[in-house]
Amino acid sequence: MNNQYKVTPMLPSGINTEEKIINLFKNILLNDLIIDINSPAEKDRFRMVFRHCQTWAIEDGSIEVSHITTSESHGYGMMILAFMAEYEDKLNPNPLKRVYGCGIHDYFDAMLRTVLEFPSVMGKNNRLFAWELFGYPADGENKTGYREINGIKSAPFTRDPQSGDCATDGDMDIIYSLLLADKLWGSCGKYDYKKTALDMLDCLWDYCVHKKFFTLLLGDWASGGKGTLSSAVRISDIIPAHLKVFAEADKKHDWKKVLDATYNVIFDLCESKNHQNGLLPDFAVWNNGKWKAPLKTILEGDDGAYSYNACRVPWRLGSDYLLFGDSILSGDDTQAKSLYKMIIKPLDEFAKNYINDDIDRLGPFNLDGSPLGDRDPETFTSPFLVTAAANQTDKEWINKIWSWKGLDEYSGDNYSDYIKLLSMLTASGKIFLPRM
Image (tube, rainbow, N blue to C red):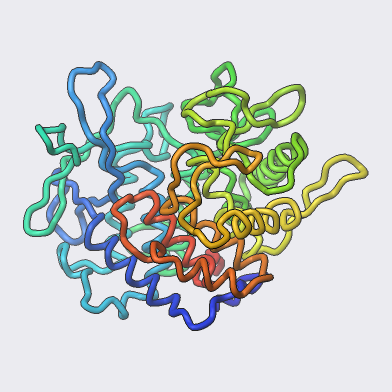
């Protein structure tokens, strides 16, 4: 158990959590690494991504191309590599020798080289990462964006010169991973991880912090804009533990102000309805002096529901609670509510009561707790490991969710697989803070 945790997570009984973590990590390493064929084929020079394949269309509609990764998956991948470094000797048979004889540290540096090679197209000297990279054009039935030869996936990495801006949560994870790397390996080698993190924090502050509200913008593309999206908050960008670490690492900017503004978004959302289940919407918009769930689509679809952005709330806010303890969210002079009472406990109880005996029931929800659309337990189940571990009230429930058959199974859905692994690491006490 990591002694940096302020709250000790409740662990399951009779379940080898480490084995589950290592099994899923092995499959990710064997299936999800993609090499840039435009980079040198050398151990200390090649570029790499964790794949996130979907089919998209180029802006002019002339050719269909699959993007091979997003900054979201890239950030997850870099954090995973840092957190899994301690397990390297336990990977047997060892898949880490497949690409240029590399180990985890080498893979991390290859991911960093990709970040450095493909910055956002927004503004001058912007060091934030372009939110998506493309691979091969779709060719008949092949819409994967990469080609595989002798077990190695590769593609020519490209960034759209028009839409290659950033997404805030991806860059937050990348920056956090660089601070983890500084703690793990130091910054006196080939790469100065700490300086790179601070350079990116400069850009995150300049491009992704609202100048009036001090909330986090959706990306650098929203900076200086007008309309709803110029101030909207995406709930997946609410990562208080990262902001607390940024405040410790970067004295140049007032990240405490961003942290307070972020907590106030949570507070307003909880006060804007009969909030009993802890569910938050995918987005929040500024409306009559308060942050509220949008009543219509503003960007992606079910923006006012607990959907594919908000599904990470149990993991992200659960991590904050486990690592730093409870945070008191203050409203007016007569109100003060804790993160535990407002989010952690009700989310855990909602999931436990909703699942009952069918753990595969989880998926998107309306804010009243009614199901929305199709079930998707692969994505929506694992984050509740963290709130269950943080709530510490029901060992039977902990055992049930850790025993779910889909937890350590590699699904090939990169988004859900990465979230599963990060949630398992957090709930089992295996993540750490980048403090020297």
